[in-house]
Amino acid sequence: MHPFKSISYVSPKAGTRLVVLGAVHGDETCGTRAIERVVAEIDAATLTLVSGRVTFVPVTNPLAYAEKRRAGERNLNRKLQPTDAPREYEDHVANWLCPLLAEHEVLLDVHSFRAPGVPFVFIGPRDNAGPLEPFAQAAGEEALALRLGVDRVVDGWLATYAAGTARRNELAAAHRDAMLDLDPAFGIGTTEYMRSVGGYAVTLECGQHEDPGAVDVACRAIVNTLAHLRLIDAADPAPAAHIDALSLCEVVDKTDAADAFARPWQGFDRVAAGERIGTRADGTAIDAPFDGVIVFPNASALAGQEWFYLARESIRFRGATGAASAGAGSAAAV
Image (cartoon, rainbow, N blue to C red; front, side, top):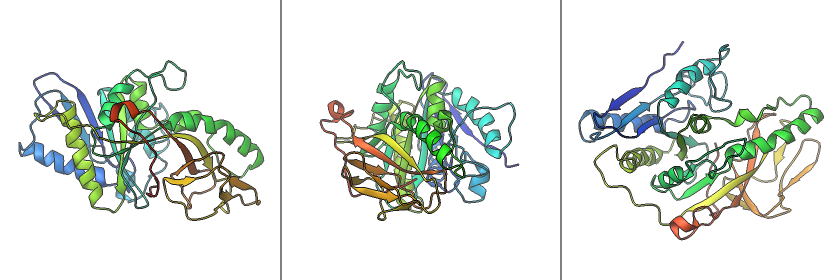
């Protein structure tokens, strides 16, 4: 079994406890390369930790990384939780990773996506006391997101996934051959788990898997995070002057391998209410229910997998940046 590795640096001076993850998905290596660069700088004293603790996990899923694919035996970033009865390799990862996350206060999880596109960051919900994802540190996530060096922010992940559960139950009844996960907890990944144990977290999507520029995006974000949290002796990075803000609000799964898109959608393409997005294998049309943006279209999804998301423009960052709008024409998919 592949071993797990983390690298920690601890300052004598108290401060924030940060954890940085790379290769949660094994074919997303920009975080691994960026962590290697930053670790080399710390070891060479080019970067000096002046307070707190930072832990780097260059390869979070060693099996998937070794096989150069998204998952080993399953997607680590779904239904992430410890278990007393591990069955798949990712269960063993979770039993090691979840306690490590709980030792820290802030998580930066570094990812990439399949198609060419613009980097963006996922954040969690607004502060709330609801049953799904109660949270009280939205200000911390928003401040960090503004300083990562990207200008697009997306929220609404877990709420959208939970809302999709009811639809999955209906689809499972109608399409018994579709292997749909009917548990809302299936949407819990690293950031959601981090919030559940009292921390806050962001997921940075740095660019296309093979784009060497994605490593530069990841490096800049890691160093900016260290500076923003005052772990290194550097000025707090200036917040982004403008943010394109989106909120996910719909997820649609494939129920048959023959389900097909109406055209080759790219991430963040705009869709108009009533516009044809795709067609089910039985001929049922799938039209956009509102004016919005298509996110994470995955033409190669298997039956039972997420096929695409829909998002609406958000005004969440308008007060922080002076403007917020949903851009179009850039491509991304995870």
